[in-house]
Amino acid sequence: MAQRDRLAERDAGLDWGLAVILLLAGALALRLAFTQSYVHDENNTSIPLARTISFDFEQLRLPLRGENHGAMPAYVVKASSSLFGTSMPGYRGLHVILGLATVALVFRMAQHAFGIPAARWAALLLAFNEYYLGVSFRATAHVPHLFFVALALFAFSRFLSVQRAGYLYGAAAALGGAFYCKESAALLLPVFALVAVFSARHRRWLWNPHVYLACLTFVLVIGADLVWNSRTWAEPAHVSYGGQVVRQATYRTHLDRVGGLGFSPYPLMFYAHDAVQAGVVRITGRALADETPEYRSMNTVLGVMLLCGVVMTAARVGRFDSVTLLFLATFWSVFLFFSIIRPGSTTGRLDAVSWIWVESTLLPAAVLGGVRLAELKGAVRWPAAGITVAALAWASADALGGVWSSGTWAAEEGRAAVHHSWQVLAQDLVVLARARPLVALGVALLAGALFGLVIGVSLGRASNKGRS
Image (cartoon, rainbow, N blue to C red; front, side, top):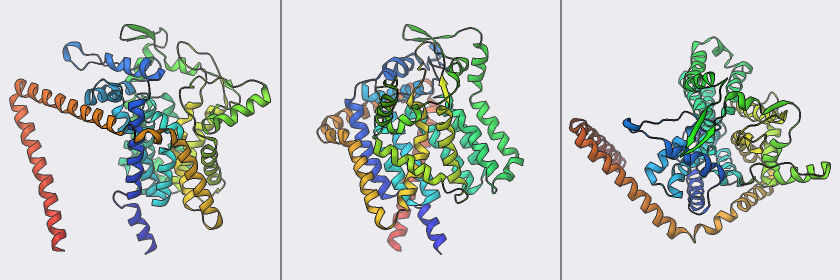
């Protein structure tokens, strides 16, 4: 009976706690999207490349890569500007939506594996720390990268729970999407394989063709990028950003940034930026170079709590299931990889080293931190919860302060964006009706049928509830 109750809890519909978290996080993200000025990665990378994209058959231009990474972030910016306009919030609108979707994915991962209390804590830890608040609305690679990584983790965690091959293909495709944002996402492919190897319940899948077909799916998704890199291995390639021609980074360029084995404190800076800098200054007499000062790091209290959650989980060797193993392996593989490499050589506008390279570790850290907070009992429960909430409130204070004051302005801009979306939709429908009247008629009939189906099902359910 208790097991059925837990399963019912995990398969429930929309949780009120998640709804409140998404509403508040959405309000903060919208306020920041309307008020925060562009950073370098927006007005020098994603937005200029998005402006060069053209789906017109007479002037077709579909770039595969940007200056340093795949062009996926530029396509997200292009889609966002097509829906919401070419204003600053218009370029960022779809990123706000994907940022909230990432929070929802983390909630669902934790809910399915550990229950609703852990899921609520995980969503809170992700949505309201300084780093995620600072990137979740920006038109950069961070939002689509974290979204696709979360989607891959969600799909593979579901595979571990229910052992359905379809989730393997979903994880492979999502990982391919993340790869087109940042190539470091490929580190998760061997992580998934190692989890299957070390999990006794899933080891038999290593003899199943679906595992290798899923790997082939990942290769096929990134196949175009592999071909492009093979052709540009010897000679440099260039891309145009609205009249500015820049040299493109290849796999070889990225590998040159690895200068050998050593120790790098930069991954620790992601979780305790100020504390690590202070310690380095005290030991060496000079601060570490920070190539990305425009991004906010999380406060030390939150960072230490997340690290403690991961370490406490890892200390329970032999007492965690395959899903917990997945989150631990994901965190430590990325964190340790960037902790044991020395900076190498760079070209163009590539950073030699950066603390934001380990941003994908935030997803498993939030889940495991949420699990540890949810299981606390006795005298430490309320103090730990109070400190966490206080640290999250401190992280969100700046954004919270301006939500109410800018509410009217944001509402007006939001209405303008919705009006623009309807105008674009109406124009496209008129063009379609004139060019292909039969296709337009078919689309209208299909839309009418779907609308009637939704109304009919809704009224039918309401009628059944009234009878019962």
